Image 1 (cartoon, rainbow, N blue to C red):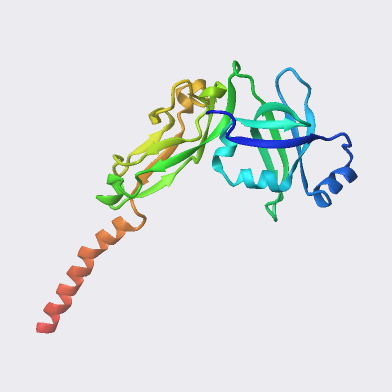
Image 2: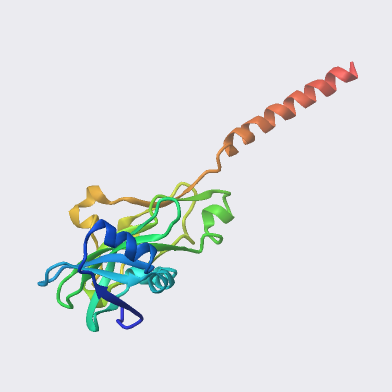
Length: 220
């Protein structure tokens, strides 16, 4: 993933009291944050609400290298966590992790499911697709960080599924779960029979037989 696609300005936050936090959020329309990792100490910061909201509209923002300018000094980071207000969805706090080109990072990457409408088990066998995971945790160098990982559903038949080991990961990218062994080969997606489909099929012959019986009784 190339850097420079996302740029964000930040200011160091000196006053860490609750009163100052409320003032920054409500009166100055700032979002609180922390920059940590690497050899430097964690640094409390604030960013403009309108800037972070605009960037957060892009899914790629959460899996890309971000050029963060803190008081005019550039740092390269990734968004490690973002906390929102439970009711208003307002961004309350952002955790930024410093990035080192030579150090692997661990991050959640979204899954993009493709060819679901053309899936054999859906189109030809009447099944339905279920997702067990919407993202996975990966480990890689910053330069290899993928924006997302595709899951191709085209060839999946009824009753078949996809696990982590079936995914094609980009070069240099490793599944954190699979690194712990085969027992962590999690289910990603499956094609299941439509609920009630088999019951309806079994009921159809019975209803037909009852209809025939009623017809014979009528002739008598």
